[in-house]
Image 1 (tube, rainbow, N blue to C red):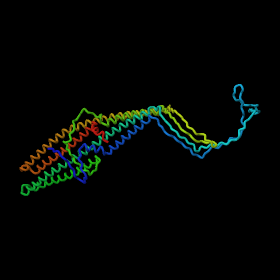
Image 2: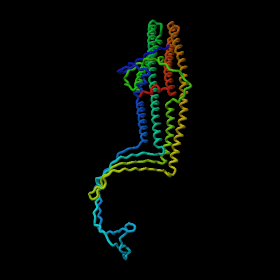
Image 3: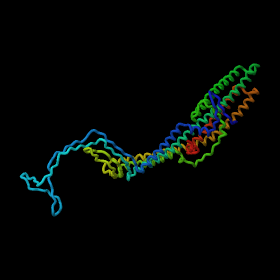
Image 4: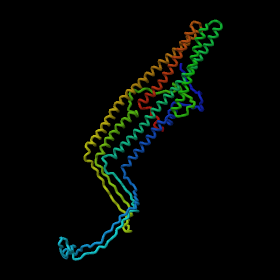
Length: 468
C-alpha cells in the first residue's frame, strides 16, 4: 500500500548533492538564516546595554584640560595720590586716623599724608592653562539608576526570548519546506507510476485494436489519459524543482544544490499528544510577561525624574598662567569638592501626570498580555484538534487507498477477462491515483500539524537553544 522511498533529485544544474535529514535541515537553517543572525546581534546589543547601565553605579573619572590663547590684555594706570595716615591707640593698640582737625567742608585733615606714586598695571591672559582629574558620583537619584539598570536586564531577557521565538519560526519554515519537498517527491513518483500503468494499457489496447478486439475509440480514450499523465509528470517535476530550491533557500545554501532525502514519512516518528500541557512555556508568553515588568520599571523611572537628586564631584588639578607686569600669578595645584542637591518643588502637575501616563501604559500592556494569552490558548487547542484529526484522517485515507488498490486489481482482472470496459478500467485507475495523492497530502499535513502543535506548546525551540 505504502512503500518507503529514497527521493533523489537530479533536476536542473545541481553542482552538488547533499543528504538531508530533517534535523540537518533545521540546523543549517538556524546557522545560516538572516533572522537568526539579527536576533543574535540584538541579544549582544541588549547584553552590552545592560553592562553600560551597570556602570552608572560607579564613579565617573575624567581628565580635564584647558588652554587659553588670546591677544586681549588688561592695561590700567593707577594715578598718583596722597593717602591718609593712621597711628596706634596707646590704650587699645588699634589703628586710629591721624586727624589734625576737621575742615570747613566737614572732611578730616590729617596731620601726615603718605604719597602714592602713579602705577601702570598690565594683565595678560594668553598662555593660561589648567589640567586635572575629576570624579563624579551620584548619591541619590530617586531610583533612576536602579530602574534604568533593571530595564536593561529585562531587555536582555526579552532578547534571549526573542532568539527562541526566532528559532521556532525558522524551524516551522524549515519543516514546511522539507515536508513540501517530500510531498512533491512522492507526487512525482505517483505520476511516473500512473504513466507506466497507462502506457502498458495503451500498448495492450493497440494490440487488441489491430486484431479487431478493440475499437479505435478505446485507443483514443487511453491516449488521452496518457497525455494527462505526461502533463502531471511535468507539473510534478516543476513542483519538485521549486520545492527543492525553496528548501535550499530556507537552509541558506546554494539553490543549485541537489538534495537526497534518506527518510520517508514512516521513518520519522513523533510523540504522543498531551492535552494537559499549556502555552506558558512559549517564548511569546514569556516576552509578554517581561514587557509588563518593563512597564512597571518605566513607572519607577518616570517617578524618579521628579524626586530629589544628590551628587558629589571632586576635582584635583593644576593651573598655570595669568601674568601681571611680567610676573606669573598662578602656578599651583588645587583640590576642590562640590556637592549638588536638586529638589523639584512645583511643575504644575507635570510629574504627577507623567507617572499616570506610565501607569496607564502598564495597565494597557497587562490587558494585551491577557488577550494574547487567550489567543495562544485557542491556538494550542486548535493545534491539538488538528493533530487528533490528522491521525483519523491518515487512517481513513490509508483505508481508502487500500480499497482503491483492491478495486484497481479487480477491475484489471475483469478488464482482461473482457467483462469490464476500457472506460471503467481507466476510471478505477483514476480513483486509485486520486486516493494515493490524497494519502500523500494527508501524511504531509499530519507532519506539519505536529510541528504547529510543538510550536503552540513552546517545545519546538528548546533542542536548538545552544545553536547560534
